[in-house]
Image 1: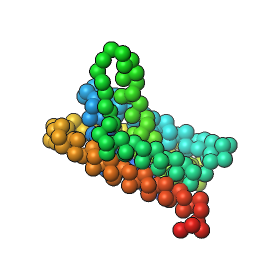
Image 2: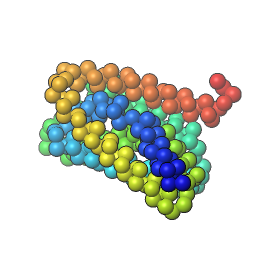
Image 3: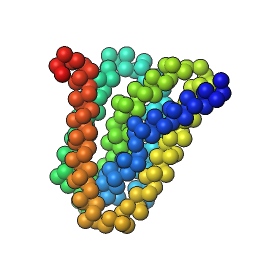
Image 4: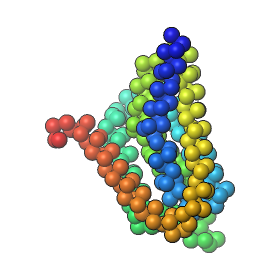
Length: 212
């Protein structure tokens, strides 16, 4: 039984790594934080992964209840998340993401920089519909107190793994330079827009199966 449960938790961890794909999101993280200092980038990394941990914990214990209370389906969540990703991607394609004018009148500048840690990094790029729905499914199937505690620790382990992956961002900055970052930002913008559209299409397919 212990071996079975260990394989279950390992499967949950690998599933989160596959769905969220922090290695694949590393270029996106580099693009989103290209306007930040190393200290700000570290803070963004920490905030984003803490937010992911909290979002997945909330999904584990209250996710289905929250969706049911507001009458929200996973399909609707996918459409909303895909729309948000598409809007962010459009800004990246135009090179406007992180555009900051350095003057004293812009008191919200630091707030705007920090906000990308939660949106769009933590939600919906990392803790998106796939990760949330997967967490809800695992929590509904393995819902004893000890199992939920173990699943919660798996979420902590994943967040730590993701934080370590994003810590490699400074190395990419040194290798690519400013011009390389600008090129990658636009390429990732195009990929993110495609991803956002795919997520929306998946939600529409699930909501209106007769259309496709």
